[in-house]
Length: 183
Length: 183
Image (cartoon, rainbow over the protein chains, first blue to last red):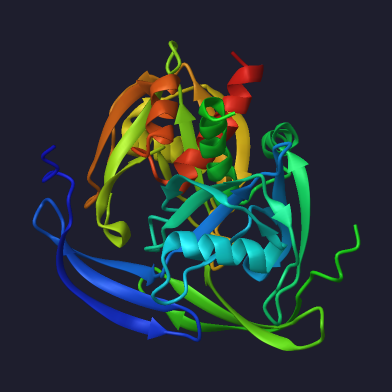
């Protein structure tokens, strides 16, 4: 497909801010009409999210406080890629660390770009089947609650506004499609 | 519910970066164990996204280049709140400006927090029914393609990885629930 009427050509790219955790870039781009514009965005290393299903297809979920939105959020387990780590290794590590569940049946589910206006972040989703509980190994300073819930209850909570985390809702759509093909 | 074992108490909050478009905050918080930690995040004014359905329930979609992810994305029409604007007014304005479609049947669909780790952004979703095409009024420097597609095709494109925009996937889940109740 020829998308020259849509594509912004990169002219230059520079870091304009680095905090303790956050890096901000500013790119100059050439618009399809030849004019120049600025684009500011966060440079992100990527993340993994895991739908962990036990043998009865109950799903492992978390409750965690998120300061940017000042509330306890219901979320699918997820975490950032460590330097040099591949996505599946990260998924297994995060699921074990945060929830204590392990599995030897992992499927790639799909991926999402959660924040295309101002972040490079990509989240890769996996499904872990027949998970078994061992013991969580939370990072120092990490506080969360872990529980399991059937998919139909999760969907009800999504439709009635109890779940508002974007990655969790997007992932539930993908999981629905996956389970229709992989009961 | 008593969430004191999860909640991070605000100690202080300060702006640490302001670009042309982006504001970054750094909060100091007290963790449930009494220790202090930093949280960095983007302060965002909020946004609206619109599932615009024609009388045959075809859905108005867009293709738009997004520099942070260096690709043309398939997206539900959406846009940022202007200062002082309410969400529904923003939805009607953005749908008209970006796509040229109008409707007099608007329903609240739900809301998502797309990026709870590092942004305050909230996206409010509406459904506009029986939309009619008039004329798009794109902002100077805005380039996008508008087309319509049936829901089942959109879901297929979501499941096969053709649609990866997080807000669009999350919104499709909510739309699915809505249409099951409001055919």
